Amino acid sequence: MDKLIQGIAAAGTVRFMAAITTEITTEAFRRHQTSPTVSAALGRVLTGTLLLGSSLKEFDRLTVKIECDGTVGGITAEATLDGTVRGYVKNPEAESTPNADGKLNVGGIIGSGTFYVIRESGYEIGLHREPYVGSVPLVSGEIAEDFAYYLAKSEQIPSAVLLGVLAQNKEPYITASGGVMIQMLPSANEHIATMIEDTIRHAPHLTAVIKENASPSDLIKLALGEIDFEILEEKEIRFACNCSFERAVSLITSLGAAEVKSMLKEDKGAVMTCGFCNETYRLNKANLQKILDSSSN
Image (cartoon, rainbow, N blue to C red):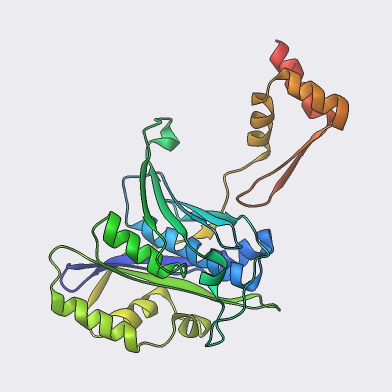
C-alpha cells in the first residue's frame, strides 16, 4: 500500500511531506490506459496533489487543474483529507519525443498554460462555501517546478518539490512513483534553505531510490541530508473515486422525465462513464422505468 508522511525539520522551521505513489500511478494507468509520457505527467500531478493537500487542513477536497495547449489537453487531480486521490487527462494517448537526456518529455505534451489550485471546505457536510481558487502560469510543464512556483507566488511559501515517475511501454508499466515537498516556514533561516538546496542538487534521482523499495522517510533523508526531522503523521493513500451506480441514477434522474423517456424509447437504457476513474455504469430499461415511476409519484 502506498504511504504518505508529513512532519517538521530543522527545529520546526521546515515542514515536509513525502509519498510513495507507485500503486496509485499504476491504478491511474490501468483505468485510463495512458501512454508512458502521460503516465509520468498524471502520476506527478496525483502525487503533488496528495502532498499539497496533506498540508492544508481547512478543506474537504483539493483539486489541481492544469489547463494547457499541449497535446495532453489538460490534467485534473482531486485529493481528500483521508488520503484518496483521483484524476484524469483529456488525451491519454499523447506522446512526445524524449528529452535530450533520453527522459520522458512531460513538458513537451503539456506546453504552456495555467496551473490552478482549488480548495473546497464544508462539501462533505453540505455547506456549499465559495471555494478558494489560486492560479499561476505554468513555468515549465514538468509539474514539480509548477507546484513550487504556485507555492511561492500564490501561498508565499518558498518550497522545494521533487516528483518522479518511471513509466515504460511494457510490463510493469509503472516501476516507480513518488514525491517530496519541503516548505520553508517564516522562521527558517537562509542557511537551512541553502543546505537543503545543496543536498537536493547532489542527491540521486528520486525514482532510482523508489525503484529500490525506498520508503517515504528514505525520500526525506535523501532531501534533507544531515538535517534532523520528526515524522508527525503517516497514512495510507490510494486511488479512489466517489462515483457509484447510485450517483449515476441520481444524475440521470436530474435530467428530467422527458429526457429519461427518450433514453428508454430510443436507446432502451443509458450508459454513463466517470471521467475521473473511467468506471462505466449501465442502466437498463427497468432502471429507467423505475426512475420514471418515482418521478411521477
